[in-house]
Length: 64
Image (cartoon, rainbow, N blue to C red; front, side, top):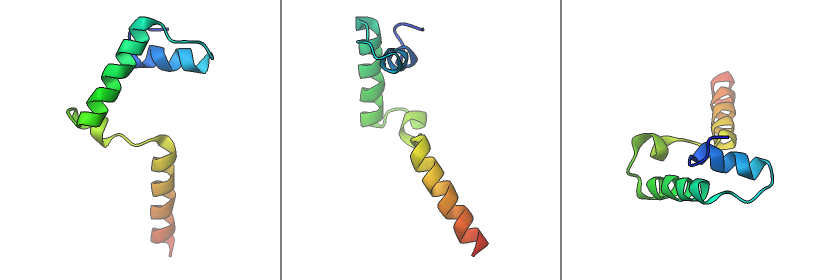
């Protein structure tokens, strides 16, 4: 687990435990960047389920 990173925060969550202070801080910073739109990659990133939905909708459109 990489403590002090957003990935570390996600690992805590997967394990069903409370995140440490360093991971909570990293998560808060990551979310702040997403909300502000300050980083191109954070703003443009899609949740995997949303990507899948859009991908399959486009495939269906192309097949029709």
